Length: 313
Image 1 (cartoon, rainbow, N blue to C red):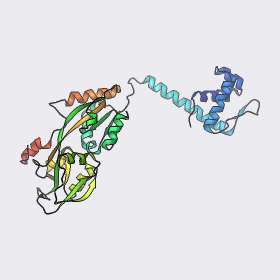
Image 2: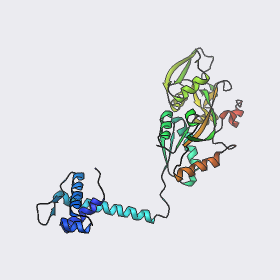
Image 3: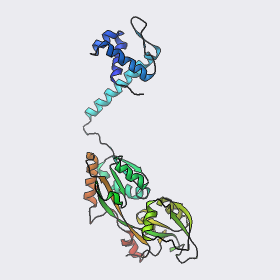
Image 4: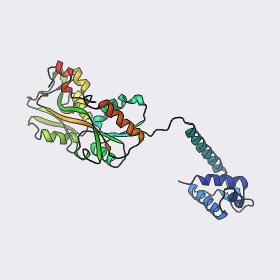
């Protein structure tokens, strides 16, 4: 149902004076135009509101009920407009950000939390990488937080480099050691579906899966692979920023990380056109806070924790 809010005022005026001619004059329009607007309102609510056979006209039972509704709607709109006028602070539009599952937690949460003192409202969509890119191209989001994507690294897009990391081949730990060894005759392997970003990245660096890797599970989501690894179901390639706490605590162990690591970059993308004032402010905040040499994320293999474990690059 849709209608012009002026029709509500027309209807309430007619209900008050009970005469089309007088009501039209009070509404400063011709009587034929006024009659058409009342008829349009009746069509919109699918009810006859006016008994035109009586003199003076009167409201039908549906009209009497709708009169209460119309009054409430007008009062609510007037109250809302008054609140907006009296609001000392401008109403902010949410800054919309799209992100793949891999980066939505914890990376995106940490990024937003780091600038949350600005109290800017956010709207977050967790999407597949291809859908996130499409959302940015279609103007359905202000920003897309993702990995390196050739299509977004050139005009009409801009990007900020937030940092780097590695995909690591990992296993759950048993007494501080990896449960599975790359030398095992049969190693349960958690693989990515071929259309996923992770699978395409792996294909670029390790096109051949070792013969002793036995695929037991397939998914496009890194988070599911992480849960399966923690359950001890097999080994998987996981981005270090997704498992940083587990790596630090030793519950997940990298397998030969100096040989088996795949570098990646994390970037924040936007269209190279005018965006909302709030989104522009967020863009500048992130640029000021995380411009090099103070990146948002760094490779775990460069961390003190990796050094303590004798794994630092």
